[in-house]
Image (cartoon, rainbow, N blue to C red; front, side, top):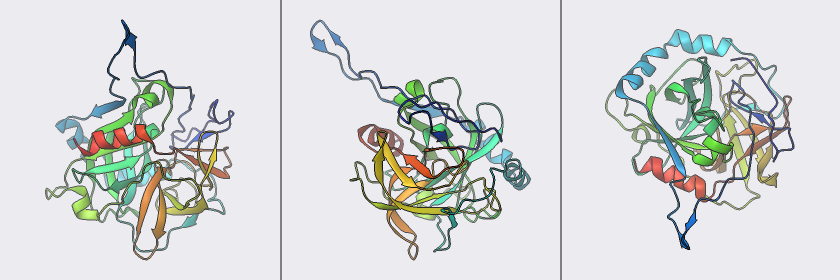
Length: 306
């Protein structure tokens, strides 16, 4: 789990580093055409979204797996060095919508990412990074035992945990490590309440113009926090290597955390326009996130309408 590697990313000129604590290696390639032509007739485009589903037993086991002792242990099992100067402890109104996403990765190790409750038709959708769900370009390597703890701080789970019952990712991620975003669907809590009825939700904006000032948030595995406290970077988005980028030194564990435009620390409200996806180096100065476009909208719609 403490392994860290430099990603081999053609589009990032070999310098990007995946942000999950297990440091997924990326290998980006141009996606293939979504449609085929046969006998002069264009076939219907295949579904661009891949969905993982977890059984009722798997979801029950996931909740049982993540005991307070196990959560405490996972935070102590990795130390990615001191928290950088750009990442500051979040000190505004408690963010009920942002939390830690705990899971067992494809190698069998306990780990975590960051995720956000978002507005959705089913009131049960959570956005994060695709590499928090599965390895890119490796269809059989998926993560399990996944629960979302909104508002997590210093061992406290003020709103309980919500087991993930389904995870939607772009097929471009599954096959080619492109489009590093995902939308999850979670079960109701132990009282039968749906996620966003309990914690509220951040709206999502697609194709947001570049140049917005955003707050990037995440549970970075850097000391002294070691994933126990929410950290925040602020910066203006730019385009670089085909993705969005901001100045930020959040690192492993912050994967999937939201980029919130128009964010108010007084209300805790903003608009999600991307998620933490990758870094420029092992001693980061830049954070990359996908520009949420048509593919991301299809992933989100698949999850929110399930």
